Length: 488
Image: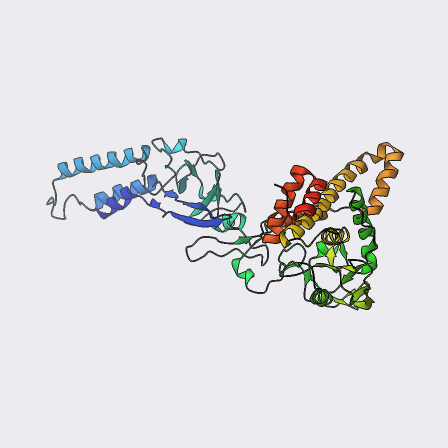
């Protein structure tokens, strides 16, 4: 009776279930459910006919001599009961199977096959192969991936919301990719996705890129992606194209910005009376000038600005360099500049090749050093002097971002009035149009000042900014002159 066992068992099979574990962001773990599928098959009337015929073949009524081999009446009664049982099995589905590992309950199938409707095409399934999953039944060709639209024939699939996906399609849409190499971020030894992210830009990248020599922009700190090119400056620094767009490359080009910051100080009733030269220099010239300076504090590991008080000769950039093959700076023109001491400050030096807003914030910082010396402030501790200089740099950045937002409003309303149009155009010609990236860059430079972890520049800024917010800039400066410390 092996044929009977085979027919009554059917051909349904259960697909195994698995889980996908990953880490995203701040150790966040998510699971990608690999959902099991029930595959069912109905045997048809032809199978029943063959089965009944084989049942009769197994029990011949009599041999050639007319001798009965089996009890005909009892055997016929047994075959009739078997036939009725098989016929009833066509009208009633087998009860649903439940598996502890299946998070989706099978579709209740105590109905005639005519009531079975495919959840994909809404047509009757009838007899034949079908899938039972996600609380519904499907034609195999109707169970399709939400992403690519192709049928899911694999033994496992993934879900997002109420939609099925191929595991590969789900990974393509949800598994994080590295913003540097553009590959899927690999899992760590624990099987979790682990990556690094810039605290401001949120650029995601594989941990290996922190040690494989991937360059960063010297201005915005973003890593160079494999499908982009950064400009190589002659001192080894790299500059992204967005920062290059507003970068200041020579001394003459920086003079209008210098005048703007002088006006900013005048607006605070802190005019610098003496004419202090401003020079844009290369990194080597800045380091050499720093070594020859006896006084002053410097922001390690890299100094990008310097307020000089000693007489010396400095090599300054006298012409804008060109971009050559290999996306490198070429034809750098420099000339010596002799600094003569006529007051407490001989010059302000700024590193070349930085965006306008970063150059301006460094210049505002160094001008505060100059103002303190020219106004006769005593030698201050590093945290107080660098802290109050960072406060002025922060205030200038804030004013630039605020004025940029104001000029956007003025530009929007300029079409309604010719006078407002004239005012807006004069502001735009003076400071230049702001791109969305440049506005974001200004916020980043403020973020850098706010989150600096160094005792002098970070803690000093936060103490100085708190004092200015509480007592005002003038009272804070008066207190510093008298006590050498911030008021609390």
